[in-house]
Amino acid sequence: MRLPITVHRARLGKHSYRVIRPRPTPPNVVLSQCSTAASEYDMRLDARAAHRIGVAWLLAARSPRSLVHIPLRSSRSPASARCEPECFRHEECPYSTAERPLDLLLVHRGLQFRPSRWKEVRARLDNGRPETAELPTSDAPEFGSEPFEFHWIKRYPLRQHVHAETLLLTGNAPLFRELSTYFLDIAGNGPGSHSWNPRKHYCNEIRWPEIGRYDQEIHIVYDERWSGTDTKR
Ligand SMILES: [Zn+2]
Ligand SMILES: [Zn+2]
Image (tube, rainbow, N blue to C red; front, side):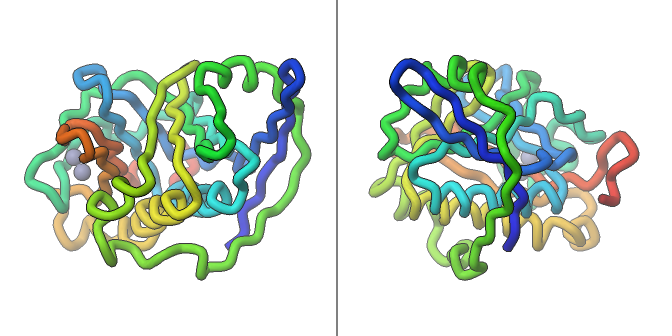
């Protein structure tokens, strides 16, 4: 799987940071923080964006010394905001009056990157140079063989922070590989899901169950209807 990227550097004091971005950011994706539940996130995206972002997670898994940044705040809004139609897989549809758009940043725990530094790092990024990442398909584990929440999150906690209008997710390589499948699954199964059941949307949910609160999650929703002219790209 190929992923065109730009590789940026930022110098901050004696530290140097390497930041990878997909090139270009896929147009039809938006990430929001729900205004009604401080720790719930809602992501809408089409199949192409889901595939690219899934591959970006795999790249993050292989790039322990880099930050993977997916700038999303300037994305256009999907035609169908909120949870309409409601969830395909779950009775409970996360409440999603989400309005605050966020970027996404994937951070290896081993970097010991302080989330509060992100704003400064982003401000100092150079223009970057284009590269193409090549990732073996075998990097992606099989989706849903064991539910993520039952085995990974205990051993490899996923940390979340919001700084500088960015959702920072800190984890390690096995976790990033596992989470890539949440996006690759949507890329593969989102298109066509409308014909199975036009009254439900297709989605995956990344949850933080370890503290017993099920209102914390990233709700990732396939959405093929986008405003603008590039819905077919
Ligand atoms: Zn859903
Ligand atoms: Zn929903």
